[in-house]
Every structure is written in structure tokens, then in C-alpha cells.
Length: 374
Ligand SMILES: [Zn+2]
Image (cartoon, rainbow, N blue to C red; front, side):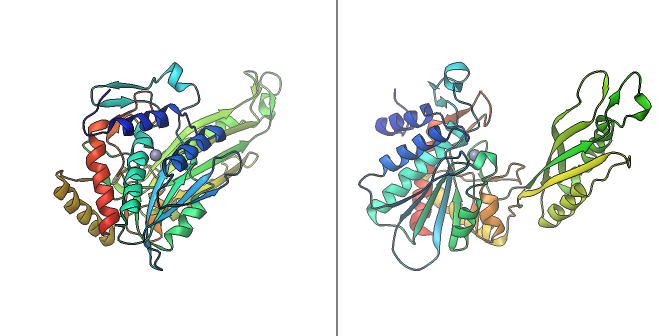
């Protein structure tokens, strides 16, 4: 099996990564991935710190390399958890190559990018060509909003000059220089149960109240302003012939600015029952702050674009994307952040997920040059 510009040994290692299934809540699977990363760094001048995961999550790796000077570092971020449950390879998404496409769970989001970023990091460490200290955080929990690693990422961000994130490239290899902020909420509605036949008038339907709340939440969507609200999950009721006591639903909020984040968070948390005899309780809040394309982000992108041109490819960025990433955390702390540096391909979070092998060598070279010149 050969691939354009990808060494056979590299490809074998990447295949081993893809075959190691690592959904976020499989602590064992994620830790096997961390083992593969640590094993791959054997003999390299890289300091490896392994922070044990907690609450059923895998470990976090803090990899340090480059000059031991007291100056802000370049921070690299890769997550090795995926959204695909164990068994996906046997059932739904076999690891296979079709031409330039490598199919498999997590190949695009984001094992492909994490893989070649680590290769570039190792190479720069071995050559001693890093332009400043390098810190590479390899994380286990991005796909569930990074509850374990957010404080770790933010801690390192406070001492970082730049952040490079290896989330998947967008179509045509474009990188990401802004992302919407993401809020997550849960709304619980409690009414009064009653027999649907004999005591209908006494009941207070939680589902009826929830239906009104769902419409109110969905009506907050304002495309012109870049604000969307989605009720993506709902459950409730006891039986077909019972006025329902309980109903609950989940709300996903996306915003472009911190001000909109604060405003819509307050509006959602402020939902009140129409019926005074029904209780509405909303929990949650903004999870990922918006990642804005500031002047500093634009300058970082221009530097990356110039390096890509030297390597021989044209680098573009995409208009603001709706999906959040750990880059939202670094950017919100004012660290110039470049995201979408990972593998090109398509089908993130689906059973059609693939990465393009031909995108690996040039993008790996781009990361290496960024580590050498930023
Ligand atoms: Zn991802």
C-alpha cells in the first residue's frame, strides 16, 4: 500500500492509530492512543508529562521541546478522542484506502492532523530548530466540550505566544481563523400529573409547557446576526393516558460575539413558565467563547500563508465556522490562534469519514515551518 508523499512506515503507524478506537468515554481506548504517542516519541528530545484523566476520561499529555528559555511558547493542541463508539470499525466504517482517501473513525477529526503534527514536532525537536519553547497538549475530551482539559489549556494559553490547532482542514485544505461560540443548556419542565381521562382538568402538562418553550427558544435564531438556537434532544411523559409531569430538552446556542453570548445566555437562563403551576428550570451556559478573527489572528494567518507558498501550496481560510474547538479557549484569552491545520478530507462525525493522504506531507511541512519561524 503506497500513498503519495507519505512514507510507508508513517502510513503503517497512522493505520495503527486509526485502528485504535478511542471514543471519549472509552478511557482504555483513549489511553491506548496516548501510549502510541508516547511510544512514538521514544528517543526524541521531548519531555513527556502524563496527567491522569479523571471521571472516566483518558489521560492528558503535556509534551515540551525546544529552547529552555523563559519566553512565551508556541502551543499545539490535538485531541485523540473521537465521536465513534467502539465497534464502528467492524460494523460501519472499516479502515480502508480508496485512492487518495483513507477511511476510518477519527481519521479526519482529528487523528490524521494530530499524527503529522506530532511528526513535525518531533522532527523540529530532534533538529533543535524550534524558534521558541514548544508545548504540545494531547487531550482526551474535546468531543464532549473539554471538561477535564479546559483549565489545562487555559493555563498554558496564559503563557503562549501562538496556538496551533490540528482540527480538520475545510474543503480544499482551508484553515480556520474564527469560530462561533457555543452554549449548551438543559431545560427541565415539571407539571402536575393526572389521569388523562378522569382528572384531565387537574393536570398541568409538562409537555405542553415545554412545547411553548421550545418554540420560544427556536425563535431566538437570527441568521443575520449569526445567532442560532437548536433544540436537539427532547424527552418526557409517563404514559399515553397520563398528563405528563416531566419534560426536558437540550439547547445548543451558537453566537459570533461575546456580547451575544452573554445576551442569549441570559435570555435562555431566564426562560419562565407560562403556566404559574408549572416549573421551568434551565441550567447550563456558554461552553466555548467565540474565536474572533482579530488583527493578530489575521497576521498569524498571513505568516502561515507565506510559508505555505514557499512549500508550494495556496493556503486560504474559511468564513466563520459554526463548530467550536479548543481553539475557542486559546483565542478567547487573546492568543493568536490558527485552527484547521489538520488533514484535509470530509465526513467528520459520520460513517463516511475520510482523510486525504496527499494533504499530509504539505501540511506537515507547514506545521514544521511554523514551529521553526513563529
Ligand atoms: Zn475535532
